[in-house]
Image (tube, rainbow, N blue to C red; front, side):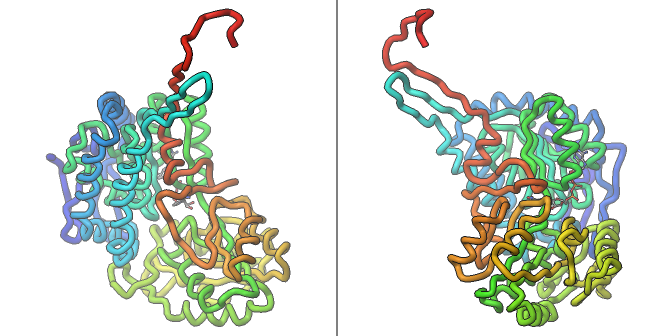
Amino acid sequence: MSDTRFDVAGVSVSPDHYIDGRRVASSETFECVSPIDQTHLGDIASGNLGHVDAAVTSASLAFPAWAALSAAQRQPYLQRFADAIGRRADVFATLESADAGVLRSRMAHGVVPRAMQNITWFAEHALTLQDRVIETPQARHLVRHDPAGVVAIITPWNSPLMLATWKIGPALASGNTVVLKAPEWAPLTSSLLADCAHEAGLPPGVFNLLQGSGPQTGAALVSDARLARISFTGSVATAKWIAKTAADNLVPCSLELGGKSAFIVLADADLDAAAATAALMYRNAGQVCLAGTRLLVHADVAPVFIEKLREVVGRLVVGDPRDAATEVGPIIHMRQLERVQGFVERAVAGGARLLWGGTRHDFGAQYFAPTLLTDLRQHDEIVQQEVFGPVLTLQTFASDDEVVGMANGTDYGLGGVCYGDEAHAIAIAERVRTGFIWINSFGIRDLAAPFGGIKRSGVGREGGDWSFEFFCDVKDVVVPKQPFKASFSHR
Ligand code: NAD
């Protein structure tokens, strides 16, 4: 592949798109800057209408042959794709850390292995997709999951490798071709994924990558009438625009959006365990959609819980995400940091009390101190809006009804956490309106399980069979059991 690669911490990375099996440069570029220390990492190609057209055309032309392969025939390609990711585990860790500020230690032990599984698990699971048979007295229904066509995948910056592979895996495994639009604040690991696809020998056009901004490249992609599906992860505002645009072409969308999830601590909870888990909400500097950022704590145990949490948070290491000891890294972009700071300042001005943090962290310009605010009302902005930074709120409650009302009292409905006696916690969970909720735990994600949100947290589910339901067209081939006699009176 000939392209104008540049070097980031010893890793060679292409700034270009990947279209029809080769790198494609662009005369227009944008800057990629590290959140760690604002170092300029490189100039990245910015996709225009021509690039989008070329990528969708290539994916459309590649579709019939890729779709015609059986799942078993596609599996070796996908295994090689995953292997290519695995061989670059260290390189992915270096790049995503430099580019998105993700903890290097988490990349090596969590994200890269998961990215591989996102490809291999769905490749294997697709083997089970062949004709499901429904027998009735009059007919045999051969229910097929046919690949839908060209799939646009649009991902955010907070976990680019994990979120891209989570969609690419099932989309390709079920026979679709893909155009991935990488996030402009963290474009580098998506570029590496194109290297992996190339090394795996995926036929030209089966996987394409576009770099560029949302309003330019993303918007042009979403507007293309040839798309069969759009799988989007990102903000509510962008999702609304995508859904409206997709509606013009009647393209189904899967929308995985923001969250403002409750972290409930019942009076019968193990407070040490709850506090240790609550501190995890500061991971990735709080830039995690599924974090339980609203701590709802029973009034009887709140003072003890707060002191336990204070102790754990006091030990958190804020710093360079490349250091093994670091637990809280930088905020992705100065604009995002200012947004986080604005939320905190407005909350305090409105009467909230800071229990800790509240300011930039002295480690560096783009670091924010883990923060906890209390003395809040349900309608306060900081309780209602997603901050996407290391900022938690704490409210107390006195009864089950009250905590359920508070948990359900925002426009979001992505996830949740409930600590308490297991049966009690499950009873509460059943009443919380959300896409998923963890009992006495956090972050357990099995590929076979559904993932997604309700209300403003999203539309649709991905994961396991739900991914295939989205990426496939279901077709019923109806074979009668008795000779069919055509008749106008036949029902
Ligand atoms: P964003 O919506 O600004 O951007 C997401 C992606 O959409 C980017 O690639 C961007 O370039 C693209 N985009 C922007 N405008 C577009 C347009 N008009 N047309 C097409 N594409 C466009 O979101 P972000 O700030 O990158 O990500 C943070 C958000 O993502 C948060 O709200 C977070 O909660 C959410 N998120 C959700 C999940 C989930 O699974 N539910 C996971 C991670 C992040």
